[in-house]
Image 1 (cartoon, rainbow, N blue to C red):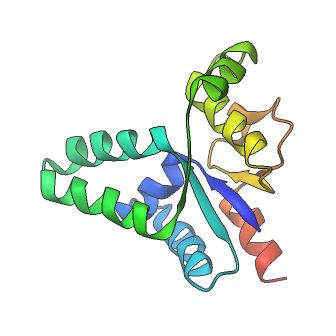
Image 2 (image 1 turned 30 degrees about the horizontal axis):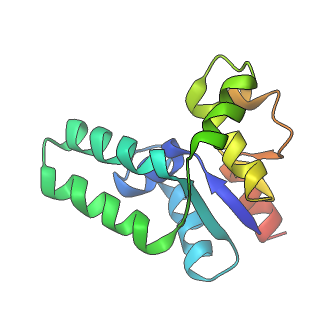
Length: 138
């Protein structure tokens, strides 16, 4: 499966945020085992750096977070066409609209998020970590 990872899921894993870390860790194990190909948007990397640095107050930890993400995920380009598609979608959350536009452009199988309600109008299937883990381990 080719899945776009929402920023929160990546941060749950990288910063070991409870109570979400265990499921996020299992998702990243599935990526390592090649059950999932994990994608993130290019803009997710800047968000990861900013949030990790703010939460940890440690620039080196923020850099490690970006480094891990670069190592284990495929990066979806965010160009003018993606931004225009996201803007034209009319979604109120522009970051989510960009992620949806990237998932469509890459023809991904779904988007993994903790905030399913934010993606209600997505034409791309939306999965919670629980949903995806159940699909991988029926």
